[in-house]
Image 1 (tube, rainbow, N blue to C red):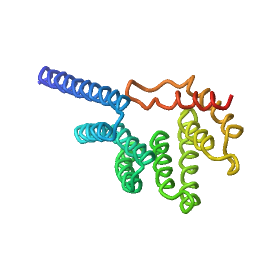
Image 2 (tube, rainbow, N blue to C red):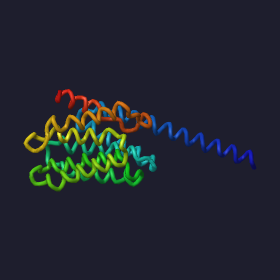
Image 3 (cartoon, one colour):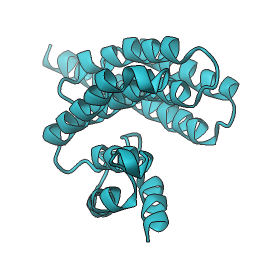
Image 4 (spheres, one colour):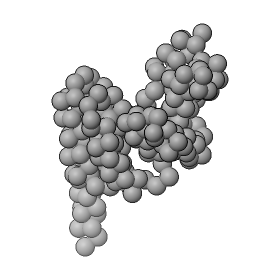
Length: 210
């Protein structure tokens, strides 16, 4: 009986390792495709792959996170009348990541991106509501993980892209960008598929402000 139990345990651990290895391989491949994607069609294909991975790996928050991040980014850059719909889809997807990983700084960063997309539908009419939400999620992301550079990157980027007459510009964004870069230089992602984006963007902001 003891030998049977040991054999079963070994079989289970091997199967778990194989599943984990398959998950990591699929995620790494799709993250690379996400980086290489240049069109809406390519982004949608990547989103669909992340969602399929999420359905297969029901306890993993990262596939939902990346799918939501892409949807939020597409909503922000969209020139069509679908910003709200894409942002709402991103929220639905991100809620699934949040359910699997509560008070996650990375998830809160994407909440901020979604709020940015919602605001950009009509900045004049929506700034008061969604501007507050953007800052709320950034501050919550900082609180959840003081060593995460991404909330500082998002804050610096938002200020950099705000006209000077409305409280933005280089003078105010540069100190925050410098803080972000300091955190990026010491940041070590948990593994190959963990969030690790934004450093190149913060370097561009600092270059523009020097």
